[in-house]
Image 1 (cartoon, rainbow, N blue to C red):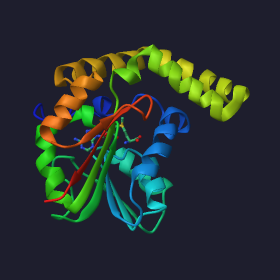
Image 2 (image 1 turned 135 degrees about the horizontal axis):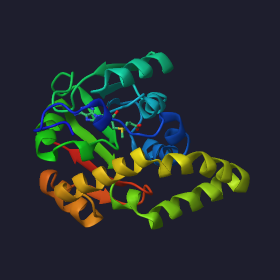
Image 3 (image 1 turned 30 degrees about the vertical axis):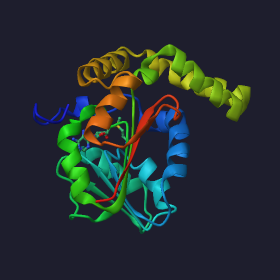
Image 4 (image 1 turned 90 degrees about the horizontal axis):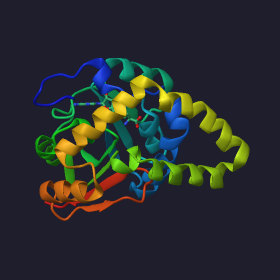
Length: 233
Ligand SMILES: C[S@@+](CC[C@H](N)C(=O)[O-])C[C@H]1O[C@@H](n2cnc3c(N)ncnc32)[C@H](O)[C@@H]1O
């Protein structure tokens, strides 16, 4: 984990699933819902953008999108894959974003904040955001780890994609899900979130409301949790 313990290892910072498999399946549903909640025509920063899939989709309706990730390999890949003129990618650290003061309208972040200390992030969010500005943080929590929540996700896929496509997606995901390394990764994530008190929705809401008073938290981007916050002054 990056933060007070110092720089993270490459292994710690990466989702252990191949990006394509994840983004083609579960994350894609979350991305669809995130896109609907981001205002159009704005300057947006995606913190921990990975290989830039979400940033690139946001760029389709934004003035400018900046993707920042601590992993150079991911940023290299993002640059190679996405070529929109209003999209830029930088290697950077979430606590010290490579952005000027009050230079963006929206901060978005997907599946990253469980790696970060919220108390350290808040001043940086406030520094880069214009007024009014919006924060939209989507993250994993127990709903991502618990089988019952995963089943809900698969049911939604089934409704959208039908039997054949859902089964083929399931067949692709299952070996990844079961891989020892990935099980260990999920376990580590759970332990970290429990320590941060963001593992349950109640804990997540408590933490975010404490650091971003007046924010709205929700669980309806299945199987993730989110915090939406508007900063006015
Ligand atoms: C689970 S991945 C999510 C990637 C991407 N948001 C997506 O939708 O696929 C977490 C990402 O957060 C990045 N990350 C972790 N700690 C970071 C930090 N302190 N600063 C910037 N990026 C960080 C990792 O390199 C990784 O790409």
